[in-house]
Every structure is written in structure tokens, then in C-alpha cells.
View 1 (cartoon, helix red, strand yellow):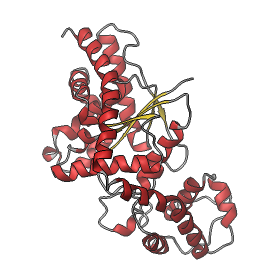
View 2: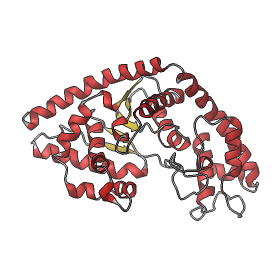
View 3: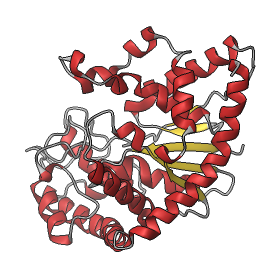
View 4: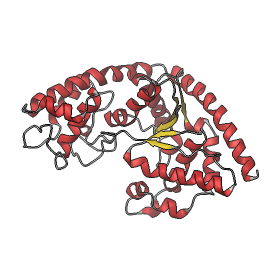
Length: 333
């Protein structure tokens, strides 16, 4: 079956290993299958659900684009663009927002987590964010969406919105109901300091993450100081549910080396953690350092990055405008 794939990454700047292993590496693998049509978006509309400095946001959009390219995404094989350049996303979000129900959005756990205890001070944008995400996907008739576990609920909502729109406007299969593509292992990379927290730019400690632009010495130092525990290196049959930091480091190794977790455990069984960490550092240097260098090189030519986004937006706009115009007719505009 030919797949039409849509996914997006927020331009938060300073992308890290979690962004790469949780999303971008998978994007590149999906692009490599000639049967797939891939659309990858820098979702700058989503990013302004919290206050952004305009100059920083523009630069972060370029940096995310550079990370896409440096990791292996090819603008000749995939459509790469920034969301705000295609106005159909905002139009689609409004129409679908009028189809969506408050009860559906109120159940979104990610809003509860991000808004915290004082929900009254959260932006309306943060609350209706999943409707915009639905518009992103449905405008392109995407059949599959790569999502992490934390976005799975949003995709379920997208499916509900599509089905309700089709029913409300008696337009069976007009909005395609997409399927999730979930990485079976380690779609969610955790902090190097606390295996129960997701690796994040917002963590105050830079030693909680491997940034894609970290140099060799910094990578070695961060892995050396990464939290483990006092128990021996696990074997193939050992259960790691109660050892989240160890599971995370083994998972990172597994993802980077394209080995399954049991293979990695077998390879290092009986060895000490310092030996494993040395091997993990070498693997990170081999895989991540070249990406970081390419990101830095690409950022030196902002016009080139802007041109890639512009060309990608033109391709995306051709698809999205056709869909939004059909949607408007159905609604009665």
C-alpha cells in the first residue's frame, strides 16, 4: 500500500537526541521507501501557543529545517515547509474547530500537563492546539502519521474530527481517517539525569540531554555523567522496568545502532557500565557529530534554507488549497 505521510516538528531551537531518535530518524527511513509520499512540516503556528521572541522563532525555524536536511531529509523527495506559509492550515483549523466538541478537547492530557495547575492563564491556542494538528494532517489526505506515545491521543482526536465532519456534511471519506505509525521501541528518549522524565530543551540542566550540535568532548562528558544505578549491567532476560535510566541508555544505543534491545543487552552482559558508556559515546560521536557539523554549515546560508522552505510551501499550498476549497463548498461558503 502506498502511504501518504504527514508529520511536524516544533521549531524550539537547539534540537536534541530525543528529537532525532523520536522523530527525524524515522522521517528519513520513511522517505527512503519510494512508495511513500512524505510531507514534513516545521510547525511554527503550534509554537506560538506559548510566547515566542519573533527573531528567535524565525531562527529556530531555520535551525529545525537545517536539522531535517543534515539528518538526511531531501527536499526533492519530501515536501519540507513551515506551517505558517500555508494559510489553509489556519482556515482548516477554524472550520474543524466548529465541528470539534469541548468535551473532546477537555480530555486531552497534554493540555493538562502543559497548562499546569493554573489553567486559566493558559492560552486558548494551547487548548485548541489539537484541532490545528488535525487540520495539518487532514488537509493532505494523509494515510499515516508518525507519532510518539504522547501524541497518540491527539491523533485519535483527529480521527474523531474527520469522521464527524464527514457525517455532518454527508461527505463519506472526504476527510481521510489517518492511521498512526508508532515506533515500537524507544520513540520516547528520556533525560540523562532522570529516566522518568522526557529528554527536553526545557530542562535547566544541559547535562540532561545530548544536543545535535554538541561537540565530541561534551558528548563524552555528558554520557560519562549520565545517571545509572549500582546494580550490574543487565543480561538479555533481565527486566528493566524498575531501572529507567539504564533502560534509556540501552534504548539510545539500540536506536542508534539499529539493533533490538535484547541484542544490545547480550553484547554488554557481564561488562561494567564505564565500558558500555565508552561504546555509547563512540556511537553518538559517529552518528550525531556529522549531523551537528552539517547543521552549523547549513545555518551559515540562511537564504538557502529560506528558499527550501519557500519551494516546499509552494508544493504544500497546491495540495492544501485544493482541499480547503472543497471543504468550503461542503460547508456552504
